[in-house]
Image (cartoon, rainbow, N blue to C red; front, side):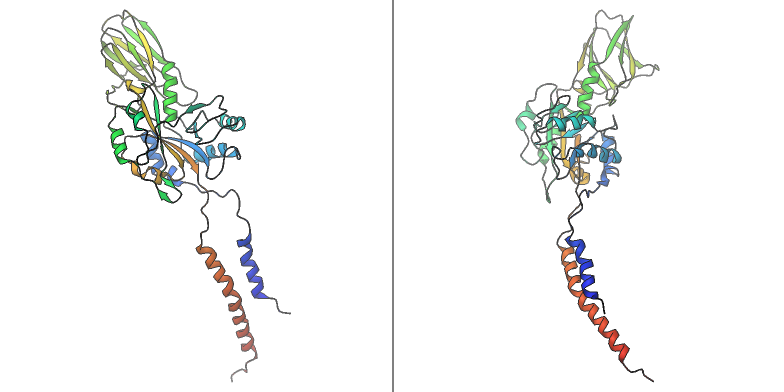
Length: 369
């Protein structure tokens, strides 16, 4: 008895199409480790997490640690620390389970959404509006509180539509005398500044900052005294670099002010300020904002599934970004493949019948002499 070849092929071809999609199919954004990611990291951007595309961390809390591992396999989080510490919420009302999962995954900062239960986590508000055209909070940007941090949202794509950024706002922001920073950098700079200790001996002041157990972010202090500064040197008696008053990106160094000096130093270092006389009095004030600038600004890239799309318009920008990385889901098959598969399914039985018939006719035809 002949096997129903056509029917067998139909079954073989159609079964994969009828099977349910495989769960957990995710793509990898190779831009994080190639070209753009290293460039943004060197500029001073930060990479945090935003989970897995299409999944809710309340329903799937495993995505919190999974996103951390996905990101860590591709890039370091910052020039100050390898492990990601910032996580985007955007509308998520945290419960105790999600908060615990965030803390267990070593996240420290959550932001841009209602937090709910967030014991042990630092919350940053999305207060600057959006970088999308005409959606920024201009009133806040033009009259912020001193030492505050303004977080401006940015999403480059909504579904398949490209979002248009506010070019006028970007140009205006880049001209402001503000500190361009990131969530993690801002938070740890503040911590470091509060931990600087000092002592005096003769005509010198020694400032020291103990090593950090997490990110190695410098801290800034303002020292007030009446004497003039001769030199600032490190523990190797090497001159400490000068910082211009217009510097808006975090780095170590110092600059003199009328009644003292502003000093930004890295954890694990000791500095000596040599004066032209013995100081009569010294006051040290930690500065939450780098270089004595008025306030800080960061742009927060939400749901960043493709770093090229999210960052391509800001290659030469002075702004600094907190990229909240979201692992992209695998793209759907689309309509073309099912149509082609259906066409093949229809054509195969006819082709098989034709070949079988031709073979049978050939086998019974008289042999030519």
